[in-house]
Length: 112
Image 1: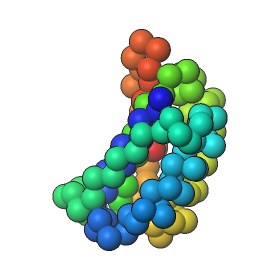
Image 2: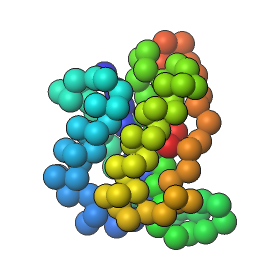
Image 3: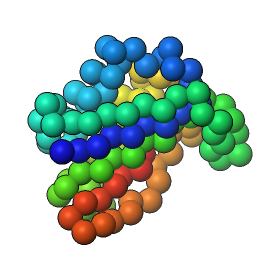
Image 4: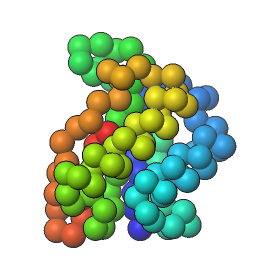
């Protein structure tokens, strides 16, 4: 049961039900998990600064059992999710930065 947590300084109006469903579909496919097991939360309108700028940005945390446990898997997942977010939200490459992976017993988080 993957957990997707998207934090952004973009307005909540950018995150329609249709967007949430497409993000769910994209992350489920990237992780190889069924869509009906995905859990997604969007936290919008947050004060955020990435790389010294408050320009529009996104941080996405993915927690899932057995799919974010190696660097190779993380690179694959990150690329697919990054492509979706930059295309859908009009972000530039420097506003959706890959973050370190924090590992827990049987559960890992991928920060994109």
